[in-house]
Amino acid sequence: MIALRRAAPPAADRAAPVQVAALDRAPARPPGPAGDMRVARPATRASADVDTTIVAGGLPPDLTEDELVQAAVARLAHTEAVYRETMQYPVWSRPADATTQHLTAWNQLGPRSQPFTRTPDARDLHGELQLDRMFAGPGEAITATVEVYVDEDGQRRGYPAQVQGEIQMVGPDDEWITVAAIPFVADGPRWTARFEPAQVAELAAAPHDVQFVAWVTAADHTFPFESPFRYTAQPVFDVVGWAGDRIVDGSLAVDLDVDVKSRDPVRITATLYDAAGAKAIAVFDDYVRPTALGRQSVRLTFFGRAIREAAVDGPYRIKALHGFIKLFDGDIAERFWQHPDDPSFVTRPYRATDFAGAAFDDADTRAHLDQYQQLDHDLRTGGPR
Image 1 (cartoon, rainbow, N blue to C red):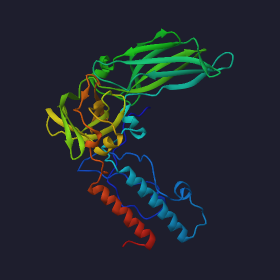
Image 2: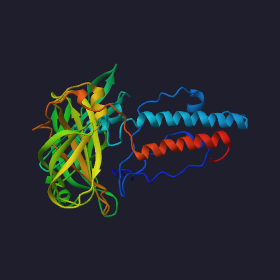
Image 3: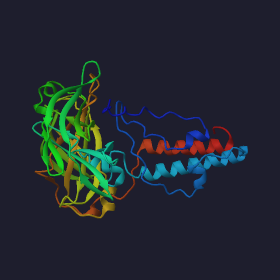
Image 4: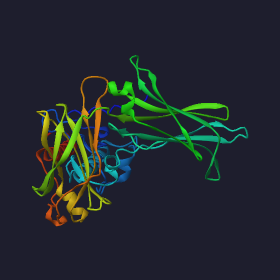
């Protein structure tokens, strides 16, 4: 079964024993206020000047005690350097780069592709299923495309096949059951199908784990190509409009007018682009915890250093605005929502130099750095100071 549930947020950091094996990675970002579910982002790069054979590989079995301590100190220094560089930005707003691509291109799915049988002349026969989006809200459709082919010197050559689609959901006995048949139409060397999840009665009644299955029959063999997707039949969180933007403490604060329909925690993710919407600059990714239902204002803050370093003047455009409601009861852990890129949300004009260039600094970060210093002392002296 394909698990669509997101991993649970990490617990608070605990002091680790001073062991070489425990120093291979930076500690997870500690939680904020009680109940905070922000998750630490991965480090983007490291700049520590340390012996990479010690940091990256296993330790030789014949090291002396002093050499083990030196290796542990080197690994600790490397981990601290990674942490310092990572925490130049807060976990809730970072530069838009390869490490945040999953937030910017959040609604894209990779193809499900593999060889599934052989032709009568002993060539591998490949199939590929591609959904054009991961999530569909009320009134939105998903397009499925199937291609069946043989590889001839790097070129795809179409192969005759029959394709039938269906939507499946997890049933009461934790098994996949079919809730809708979706016909495919031949489109040259491909087959296409279109469906609206919210129009399927079983899906509209309640949220479920779901997947789309394309049954491909070719060369006397039938094979299922499966791809999970997400849907929402009823709005769970609405962005009604733009409530303003300004610089606050050196960062860009954007206020949205929203309609809150649940008191469950709401994850909000958005990407800040240049005015043309072509260059991604920074991302926002954090939870809000509503205390009341209905219309209210929610603030997104894009960290000033990320904007200043991008050296792109405003106005700025907000895109990839989406998120989910975090649920703690029932089988579904999250219910997604999104706001379309058009009509667009655009800020007032700013210069990149209007924003602060200082690195992020807060009590939690300083506490982590103090912990590194304590560990370094303990390693070098053989005990706590």
